[in-house]
Structure formats: C-alpha cells, structure tokens
Image (tube, rainbow, N blue to C red; front, side, top):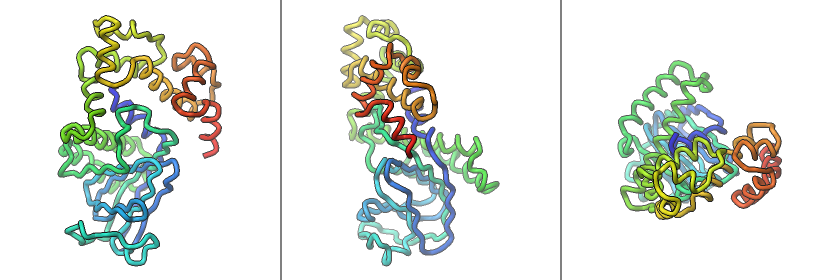
Length: 308
C-alpha cells in the first residue's frame, strides 16, 4: 500500500453514504459542517456548490467529483432557490452558462474527520477540490467507474451499502486525490506534494516509506530504515529530510499516531494495548507522542469521539 492508498483507506473508513435524487426545480441539500468533510459524486443533472453562505459558488455537472474539506460550511442547491435563499443570492457574473437541469442524482459520503489530515502531503488541500470528468488527469478511469456506479444505482438505489458501491466510491475518491496531486505538481502549485511524490518514487526512499506504512509497529530506528535503502544512516537521514522536509523518526511517529486513531475509534482495547500495537514501549511514551501531534491525550480523544 502506498501513501495515497493508505490515506484514502483511512479517510473513507468512517463515512456514511447517501444517495440523493432531486426532481423539483427548487431545492437545497446541506450537510453538517462541524467535524465533517464531504465527497460528492455527481451522476446526472447540474447544480451548484455554495461555500461560505454562498458568497462563492461552483457549478457542478454530471461526471464531477468534489471534495469539501473539514468544517467548511457549504450547500448543494438548484439554481432556482437563489432569490429566496436565506443565504442570499450569489454572484453569478463569472458563470457563462446559467441553464439548469432540475433532474439530479448524486452520491455523497459524509466523512467524519475529527482530526487534521496527519500526512503532511495533504496539508495543502484547499476548502474544496473539483475533478471534472473532461479535465481530470485520470479521465478514462473516472468515466468507467462513474458508468459502473450509475449502473449499480439504476439496479437498486436502496442497496448503497453493498460492497460493490462502497468500493466504487473509495476508488473514485482515490482518483480525485490523485488528480489533486498531479494537478498541483504539473502547475507548480505545491512544492510539498511534489517532494512527497518524489520521495515515494525515489529508488532509495520509496521502499523504506512503504514498509513504515505497512508495519509502523516494528522497532524502527534510522539505522534499520537506512538498511532498507542501501544507504548509510547519515545519507538516508539527509535524503529523507531533503525530499520531505521531515525527519525519519518524526514521520514514523506521525504514521503510528494515525494508526492509533483507528484503534481508539473502532477498537475497545485499552491504551496500553494500543501503544503496543503501534510500536511504543509504554502507554506513557505513546500518550506523550499522541498529545504532541494531536494536542490532547489519547484517553481524552477517545472520550470526545464516543460523544459524537
């Protein structure tokens, strides 16, 4: 599993999927913003994404994939509610085509993200990102997957919980994030993303990073990581820092804490057992690292999550 696959699988593990079908001329669809991100798959029709009380609007049409980041207030709406919307009328001067299709079908995943993206590659994610079918760097794959998703929903809209639909949504989200990475690099907008992609592709660093993700619980040292690359300890540490801007051991801590969050959310084992599972010698050492990265102790994190 590479860094992107690891990120996508963790983000989408805690999600609720909805199928939304609209046939009226005047509607709004709003999700709770607090602690949540959202992933929209537009299958048919045309609508708008309004952000920050609709002061910014984005047209959405069939084939678009959209990710709205954590805590960003937004609404999906037809064009026909603009004048009487409680949010006010948005500025449409930049939109050339103001025609609307009142028949809409879209799928949305409500993603609970009560912590920041822990992988530094994703720190540049904007408030929203749209991958249009005709502009996506994975256009052919995206179209095939959208056709399959459409086919499954036509068969049975109530069967959204099926493994087929779940995996189609996961793969489409993967392609959206991959498109974001490729676009940022090709347009020179994110040096951070470019460096991390380069690190994973690097013949020296790639295997070490992959093994850290696959087995963060191992008793890693800079020396043992370096042995995976064939470099000396100092050469490996310098190369890692040059590519990623981070140290190998700090990166290992980030991955371990990210893994521990899954256990805190979905497993009832005690803190000592979780510490052991992610590679810490004691609950004290684990709690100290967790608080440094997440801002609160793991016990407090678990309490807050269970209240949601």
